[in-house]
Amino acid sequence: MPSRKILIAPSILASDFSRLGAEVERMTAAGGDWIHCDVMDGHFVDNISFGPAFVEAASRHTALPIDVHLMITRPDRFFPRFAKFARSISVHVEADHDVARTLAAIRAAGCLAGLALSPPTAIARIEPFLGLFDILLVMTVNPGFGGQAFLPETMEKVRRGAKWREERGLDYHIEVDGGIDTATARISREAGADVMVAGTSVFKAPDAAAEIASLR
Ligand code: DX5
Ligand code: ZN
Figure 1: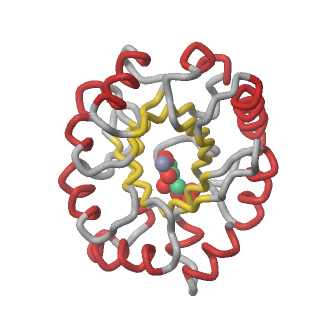
Figure 2: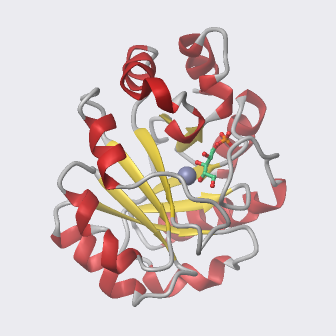
């Protein structure tokens, strides 16, 4: 399998919300590939972030694909409200829904379907859904907050996901999310990841373009 292009997805959870448009434009100009949007409901995770109107506003400031990460208990109920402006929508395998049905519905809505799993969740949990998703989103921190430390034990899941992709002739992105900086991006890339979500490292960097280039 040819090596995949490494994509960088700045996570707007780390942005200055009072200047959302300018921040999205800044990450677009700095060379970001996707704009990662973390939606949290205060139930699936112990935090509330933003909803469809906020993500739609962000989408008006970039031509980059909008990569929505639903950290919510009922992604089946709410994903349609993002489908008009999202390129990809990832849902958690741990959430309270019929996973296969939600993934199929996201694809039917014209979006790439992503399946996310949190650090405590075994990779075996997503095996039944191989072939039904376009992105495997391996959380490298516990979901809910930016600025946490990378959990290296999650790399085993990235390696297994890359092996299954190879063995079964599948073609999905492997996206890592949380605590990604130059060092952990390299570890993730070596394990088989091709999409790097980065919040703190790029939004707090003095030079976002240089940081994005170093993540690649
Ligand atoms: C955490 C989110 C991550 C987070 C990444 O629940 O899913 O996308 O915003 O932020 P950093 O890069 O600061 O860990
Ligand atoms: Zn995320």
